[in-house]
Each structure stands twice: as structure tokens, then as C-alpha cells.
Image (cartoon, rainbow, N blue to C red; front, side):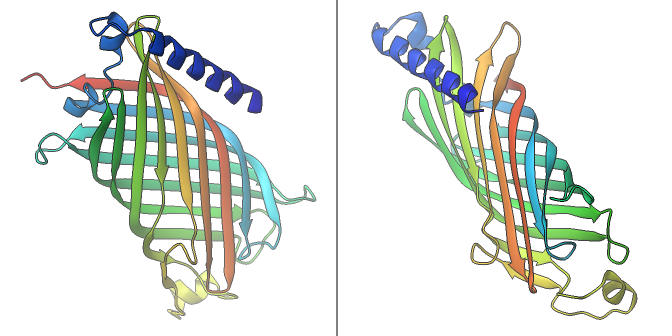
Length: 281
């Protein structure tokens, strides 16, 4: 993986050098370098990404051991101009999914983990340079999933559900290469605060849902008890009729509530494509 990213940054450095040598204001490279700031501010952008990689899971409700395995994920993010804000406000929609198949250190236990996240919100854009754009905003996210442990007879699964506010920011850098506009994007999402469902230590789901024994099963979360972050960095490669994109996605989800600890660390290589549609006036 280090070798892959070394190649990517080497290409990035070459592109930046090539751009700096082209100083003619009316050159083709200067025109091609007018980003997604000039293009995407008045256009709708859709990103579809598909990833695979490694995952590390600890859920002390099910097992005191860390489980490791392979993970597969998808991510779809759309940005479109809002009807207010003078063209600088973008409407954001984001959907993420992640599935992993993990095994215990002794290889005699298996876990299946599924996570789904849906969010929507707004972001404000700043054009820092003709080829550099910053977007910052927030998403209202609902997230749910489950973990199933094949070794457990009683309470073999752990369910999750949470609703909260997630600040989001992205930085786009456009550059010209082979008379085409390439784009490097880095995005970060930080779940900030909200409410989550969690059983208490030693409490079964039968007690919660059949007997109705509530025991602080809805808890508020913040970075103090649930430090989590998502990082996505991608390179858009323009072809004739489609823009391909590839990069790296890290999803770190952690919580410590009701005497239970959980973490799910996912690292994935992602590939996909980008589609931009500009509205004609």
C-alpha cells in the first residue's frame, strides 16, 4: 500500500511542476485547471466508490477479543447547488455501507459485521485559488448495523442505531495533465454529537424488548465517549466520456458506553467514477 501511495504522490508532484511551467494566461492548461470550483459550483456532482480492505473489530458485548478480517464498502456522495446562498451553498447527500467477515485470534470464532449510514445536509464553498476549493458544512446522519458472532449461543448479535450531527469538510485541487483537468480531493467527516442505542453491560435483548426492562439504553455520544472519524482521499482521472477515481478510505468508529467498548477500524482502497451534470439556463 505504501508503494501505491508513493506512486500517486509522485504523479501529483509531476503534475504540479508541469502546471507551474505553463504561465501563459490563455493557455489550454490554464483553462483546463479551472476546477470543479468553476465547474462544480454550478453543476451537480455524483461520486460512486467501491472499496475493499482490512477491518479490525472489538465488541466486548460479544467477545473480549479483537476480530480481524476483510471488508467491502460502498460510498455515494452527491453535491448540487442549493436554491439559496448565491451559488456558494451546496446540498449534500451521502450514503455509506460496509460489510466485513472477521475471525478471532484463535481462528475458531467468526463475526459478520454490517454498517449502513445515510446523511444529508449543506456545505459552504470558498474559492481559495482558481484551482483550489474548500467546502465546509454539516450532515444529519442516521446510522445502523449489527455484528453477529458465530460462537455465542445466548446474545449472538449486537445491534446498533444512532442519529447525530457530523461536520464535513473537503478540499479540491485541480491541475492540468495531458490537456485534461485532473482533480485531487481530500474529505473528512467527524461525528460530533447525537444519540445512540446500546444495551447495558450484562443486559440481554430479551430483557429489553420482551420484558421491557429499560436500563439507560439510549445514550448521548460526543468525542469524549465516541471518538470517530472518516477520511477519504481520491484522485479523479478524466477519460473521454467518464471520470474514473481511485484512492483511500479510512473509517474509524469507536464508542465506550454502558460499560461496553467497541471499535471498528476499516482501511480500504477505493475505485469508482464521477459524473458531473451542469444545469443549462
